[in-house]
Image (cartoon, helix red, strand yellow):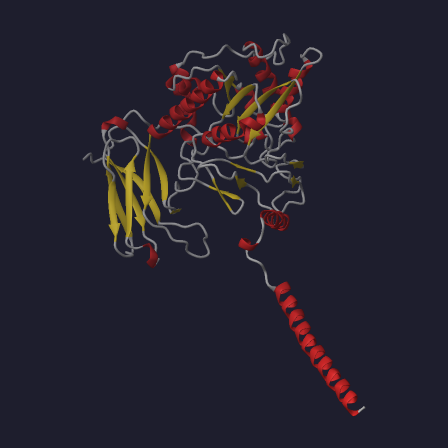
Length: 480
């Protein structure tokens, strides 16, 4: 018995030891589980679906306003978040909603009709900026959607029209062309209308943390007789004309529609650019009161619903003249759409530039005295014939990482090398750089100066980096 009892005792001790070891292992395993539950995984440890869920959660908590379209070379284009609700609950929305509207974006990230085209429908894609987006009114009130209603009213049974508003606030022509090229297989257009507004020559915005950041050249949406403005408009309209010819080769007709503050200058620049495709210019009456939103409703003073209706009627009648539609009814009796390519009126063009003179100094980045300049900016100054050189007064910034700092200044359009200055260290006071002029710019009423630095620094509390400060830009009658 004693041997049997001893065996049971040893077995009991062994089982107790095993239980103790298991208990220790369980405690350790539980602690490890708690630790792992508290450790945040890195992005590299997440699979693609988990990454998208995380991104959606971030957008829900802090939704951005804009996002760049992925995988497209700069300047590319930006959009809203796809299938996202934009209404009064959005942190950036005003009391009346988002851009005075509540809407849900489609799967491409636009306030527009569904991407898939209805069976048998003919689709017009209207490409543009905030005028096409119809800032300040509901999407259904935009001239694009009102145009669709006009077209469908005149369509025979069994046929229909769709109008896709491919427009976004702040887009320039480069953004518009890029968006159309990239998204065209999705949109499947039968016709394309490029809508040109008065600031489409501006440098493209960059999307930073969901907001837009200005580029170096901002026109302020007004016209001025200068080398750079003329060059940009000629290149812009030629780019649109080239895009239109490529569309035509694939069986898609297109046209230009000049919106906003154009009047006589649309014909002037279209003639300089040798535009070949048909175009129309919105009547001046439709971009003035009572067809504009009030400044309280919209500081940019885009058209109100009545303005969009008049614009849609005029555009409809223009398309009748192009034989895009056989509807014989005219929708704009007060302002018949003219035939394409009217003749340039030199007196009217001169009067138009004279009208813009008081507004022609832009208000964008790097144009006001005393303003901090980023890595590159373009300054504008009015001039008179016979003035000899431009003087630029600047102040350096007391930030050690900036130095040595190289600054290049060039008069745009002048066949002269840039004026270059290198600052090895911070120097107090005003530094004046002189840029000679030649008579090749004497016919222009404004001169642009490009200022470029090889370094920038971000100085708290300002997030956007800067290189220097311009204190004045002026003319000196001495000609070198």
